[in-house]
Each structure stands twice: as structure tokens, then as C-alpha cells.
Image 1 (tube, helix red, strand yellow):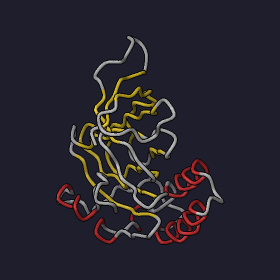
Image 2 (cartoon, rainbow, N blue to C red):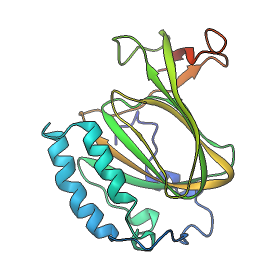
Image 3 (cartoon, helix red, strand yellow):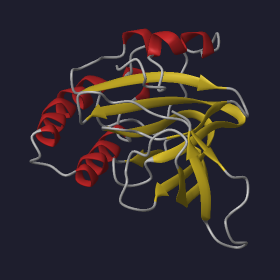
Length: 211
């Protein structure tokens, strides 16, 4: 992972894991194992990298499969696999803690809620410039403001919902985060979002990239 990427690696996030982090709540019996999920993920990521598969189709396929995984077959956070095209991390967020707004440059992401509830606010960057420099004031459109529960997924691509903020909901949450790299230097940049919309009753906000 690039050093500027604020999506911290699983090892660095390990202190956030509670003492019972090895325990998992079971959803319905899964129809596939984690090993089967990873086996299918590899050719899909390769197809995406080769531009034989578009991002929206890719993330939709991953969501469909990951929601079928038997949670008891997912390895502990420090044994989750890494690949040159993707990385999976697990982390825990206490209620009200998390990651402030940030973008995702040259990679897409899928958040899967293993336990608890997570609050996610998503935004689209308006205008043709996709990677504004630090200090540039831009207009963004809020595309979602939801609390997700166990078994739900949140997705983003390089073109859609690319900016988001992630915080632990009531009681905190445990998440899997799957990143797929689409460029040589994938990274994220924090974004400062105004507290109030540009016009009352709208979903448009002024924001600045912090570098």
C-alpha cells in the first residue's frame, strides 16, 4: 500500500480490535467458504485490471459473493490475504470514532459489516477535475447518509461515491474492507467538508482537499 494511503493496513489497525475480535456473529449459513471467495476474486480483479470488466460490474459481483460467505471461515485479521491487485483488512470502530471524509485515488472499495452498525456518508465530486490539489475549494454532492447493519455492504468506485466518511454506529462495529488497486500509486486524501450545505435543503457542499 502506498505510504500516503490513509486506509491503514490491517497490522496498523490491530490495536483497534477488541479482545473478542476472534469471535464472529453468524448470519444465515453461508453457501461458500472464504477460500472459495478469494479463489473467484483473483480472476475478477485481473479482469478488471485488464479492463475486460467495468468497475460497477466488478463491485456488484464481489458484494453478491461476499454476502454468501460463511463468516466462520474468514481468517483472523492478521491472516487475511493480500494480492498485488487487492488487499483485505479487518478493523473495529468504537461508537463515534472512525475516518473523516477522504477520497480514493486509483482504487475502489467495498466495506462489509461483520458486526454492529456503521455510519457512512458518501459524496461525489462535481466538475471535471477528479484529483484536486491541496487547498482547492470544490463543490461536492452528498449521495448517501446511512447506518448499515451486519451483512450489509457499502461500495465506491473511482467515479461514484468516491469520497466518504466512516464512523462506528451505536455500540461500534467490525468491518471488512476490500480495496482493489487501479493504478500504480493508490492513495487517499482527507477532505474538509462544510458543516452546512451551500443552499438550505440541498445536498451540495463546499469542501477543500487537505493534501
